[in-house]
Image (cartoon, rainbow over all chains, first blue to last red; front, side, top):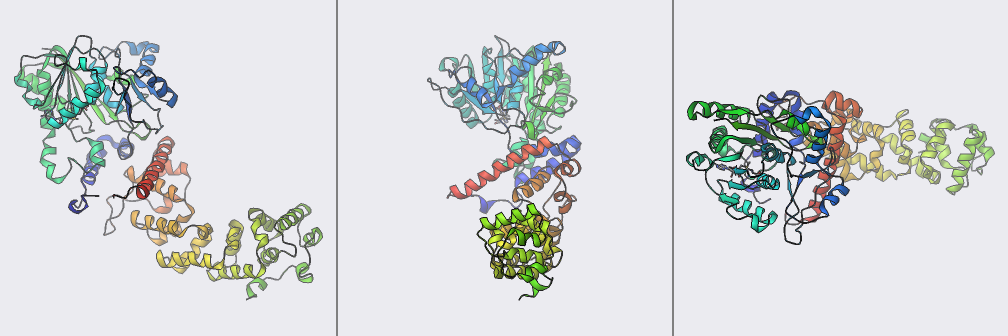
Amino acid sequence: TKWAGSRPKVPATDLALQHFDATYGLQLGDLWPSVRIGMLSEKKYGALLNNFASDSDIVSSFHSQGCRDFISAARSTESQDPELHDHTAAPLSSNIQCFVFPRGDVSRFKPARPDSNGLLSYYLLDAASVLPALALDVQPGHSVLDLCAGPGGKTLALLQAQAVRFLWANDLSGSRTARLRRTLQSYLPRELLTEDRVYITSSDGRQWRNKDEHKFDKVLVDVPCTTDRHSLTEEDNNIFKRSRTKERQRLPLLQMELLLAGIQATRPGGDVLYSTCSLSQLQNQCVVEQAVSVAQKEMDITVKVQNLSSFVQLFSHTFHFAPQPAVGELVLPHLCANFGPIYMCKLQRIS
Amino acid sequence: FCRALCSTPLPPQLIKHPGKELTLRSLAEMGFSETQAEMVYDGAKKHRCKHDAPILVGLFALDLNPTSVVKILEKCPELYAVKGSQLQQRITNLRKLGLHEGSLQRVISHYPQILTLPVKRVSAVSRLLREKCQFTTQQVTDVLRDSPHVVQEEHTRLEYMFQYAFFRMGCLQAEMVKAKLFRLSMEELQCRHGFLERRGLYQTPDKKGQTLILNPRLKDFLLISEETYLSKIAMATQEEFDVFRKLMAREQEEERKQEHGDDDD
Ligand SMILES: C[S@@+](CC[C@H](N)C(=O)[O-])C[C@H]1O[C@@H](n2cnc3c(N)ncnc32)[C@H](O)[C@@H]1O
């Protein structure tokens, strides 16, 4: 490998593992070994179906390969179980379809191919990262802000609901917004990508506080985090490199500021969804709890944590959820359903 | 030379009729039951062994009874074709390698194929274990006794298995012998070890031989059933282990492909 010469003595992936053993061992207790081996083994993907492409065979091809749309599968459980029916947090009315191989099946998806219009028929992503988009529950006519959108997996999921009236996708990094733009161009017809429908910017999400003119119905705050799975497997761009220690330690603060900015961008009555791909309590519950209290004290904004437990129960066939964190929900990696980690917490702005 | 063979007295029938053609009757005289005699007779015929099969002399000389002899020949009919002189050399060689009465009979009963292999081949494996893997002479004997099939393994595979246990897992030769390491396939070893390692229950010792956690001893997680391994050592479900096995197989397959395919790296 090219970098062998300049490689640090202890690889960052090892530093990450040491760190996780110390913190998650305590946090997750007996669950940690199963989560650990999940994160150290090949992850599973989901295929987010592109509703804008016209490959009519793709669904039957997925079925013949033995995979199924986990969202419609959950919806059929929902209709059978009246107790689950009454959940206000996030009814499952969306058009989003995401195909996965069954529990324990380690088959892989082939790369998607373009249809006759050049649009790709599906997007491969961690199936659990569709959950924040589902939980946000975008309804027809809604305006949506995706504050940290690059490279665009969740943006694409939000757009698949075919309900968004206007979507503003932002990311600090110009290269990431460029990638987002390319992704959207490969999945959406050009007429849906006009600036009055999908608006893309590269700016610091924390500065959103100052933009008071736009208020959104739904805001997704999918913050930068320790990207636990990535940090355990890739040396490149690893946040556990010694040179990035300060940056890593400042993450919770950055996350809280981004969440606060997201809260400010939400109209009263609207929802914010905070998510990470880390197991860290410090980056998950603590950030949410802090932000809720700072919003109240310093901005006079009341936000209410939404209960997602019934929503989560619907998907318990597909994902392993952590036993009730204080706020929010957490998908735990597990060899038999190797998705996540994904943490999400839904907040409603009251005033 | 003949000492080995003659150390136990031959059954009188064999001494009385040396070189006598093999018949159902002569077999019965050796102590085989009627059905056993038929099996041996057919087997011998199929392997074109017209005269007194030297293997019978050899096996009886080891004090094996007719029932054991039949079992051995069923397992490895190729033995009918082995010449008397070769057989003697091979048995002598096994004794030289430390397999004495009891062990010798056990090895031959378990793994009769060992008598079909040239002396050179068996000695080469024992040399490999002593020189490249630094097992003591006694340890080599123990390995041959516990896992005689090593004599038919590819040398690179044996050496790789040793190196994996020594360098990757930090085990010493004595532990490997105790754990009967070579009974396992490489895949099984990597699965049992890798599963523990990724769960955070096994660590490769550092240069000073230290680990942050207490590793289970090799024999404590190799010499047990999979069920016990999962419930007592790995504390995981069968479902997880089954998935892990599939993933490991694929990871290794891909590593192999990379080693052979890409020449950039
Ligand atoms: C977890 S990723 C988002 C993944 C994306 N939502 C998806 O599903 O594909 C976090 C993103 O936050 C961006 N980011 C980091 N700091 C930021 C800031 N201050 N303002 C806005 N975006 C930021 C990073 O460039 C990164 O693309």
